[in-house]
Amino acid sequence: MSPRPQSLQSRLSLWLAAQTLLGLSAICFAIYLVTAWNFGQKQEEELERKAVLVQHLLQEADKGGDLGFLQHKLDDFFSMHDDVTLSISHEGKPLYQSRPLAGGRWMLRDVEVPWTQGSATTRLSARIGVNTAQEAQLLRRLAWTLLGAVVLGTALVSLTGMWLVRRGLRPLVALTRRTAAMAPDKANRPIDAADFAEELRPWITQFNALLLRVQRAYVQLESFNADVAHELRTPLANLICSTELALTRPRSNEELQAVLASNLEEIGRLSGIVTDMLFLSQAERGTPMRTRAAASLAAQAGDVIDFYDAMLEEAGLRAEVKGDTMADVDAALVRRALFNLLGNAIRFAAPASSIRIEIGGENNDSEFTLAVVNRGEPIDPAALPRLFERFYRAAPARDGSPRHHGLGLSIVEAIARMHGGRVFAASQGGETRIGFTVRRDG
Image (cartoon, rainbow, N blue to C red; front, side, top):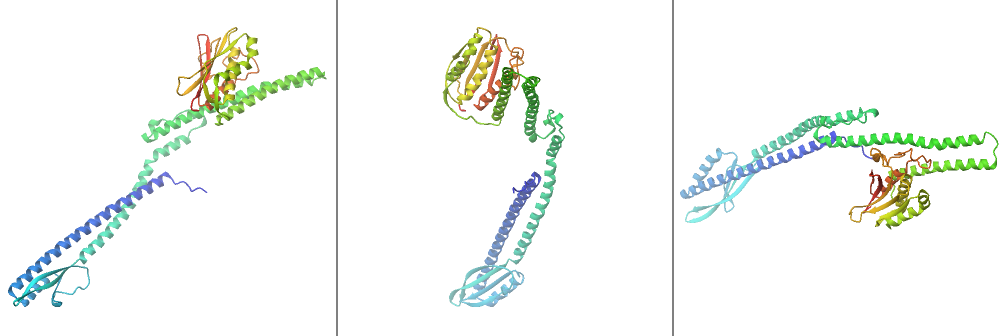
């Protein structure tokens, strides 16, 4: 079971809270360290001053040689400095102790001072200490204060951040409501990107483009369903009528065979429509080419011309191949596309004219081209963009054969897409050129 996705608002709020916590913690920790270092430096300086003062007093007492005078001086001094302690010893024997080191925290320093006793000079050992309990207490209070500031600051920024995030996401909420309010009959009305923040405009642009593609696909599907129903209705009606007519009275074997032959022709037409529709469906789902190998495009075109040889001769037409190249293609699919293109050209070519299958692209680094060119009645420029739509016929009056159901050029387009190419069509000066490209790298 996949975890429940976290909302964008919660995620942004948590990130903001975490960032605030880390930032405030780092700042407060730095404040604590700097303050503690300053206290330490101040205590070191204070201890140094006290040590210098004690050394001075000991040196003054040494000049007079009066130890009692020294004790009196030290008592007077330490009576006014209860945060300082001093102990003096000579050869391990205590000579003076201002106050015991009881409680608190002390910073100590040992010094030695020359001392004259009679004619001999010896050294006195002194240990001076400064009470740091007050600074330690201040640091503890500072630590708790900073900790409270971190907690309160994080909570305050988090709550404020949640409100700001919610406010900042209002355009998304408005966009959601706008898309939810779209009705199927209003899907063609794009969302105005100018009404939303700059960051949302690229998404809205892509969404509008998607809506346009969906609308086109929906319209195409509706048209396709109607066209399929129309194309299937005619052969089915013919089957029903011929069968009902055959059953109206007893028929001879010859008459029944004629009816069955007619029915078989209609069934073949139905089978062709279904087969072509299945191929187009597979191509649109991204079904890859079955095989791919280097093949001569001129050889494939020659095979197609050989197949149509009888039809060409009957129509008084000629066909030729111009150009050649080797390409990595599915040869069967290329032949199928050329079958459809050449079949169209034969039906619409002017009598006694020549049809050319042109192969080019040797000097093109990206693609090869295959085109079938014939002379004949030009195609309306408005119809050229629709030639490759399913069941579309540019000139139905000229081609009344029931064997052709308007899927041939759609199949050509599907085969071109499977080869990474595109289709093209042009008709001018009495010459029609329809073909497709094959991408070199597949």
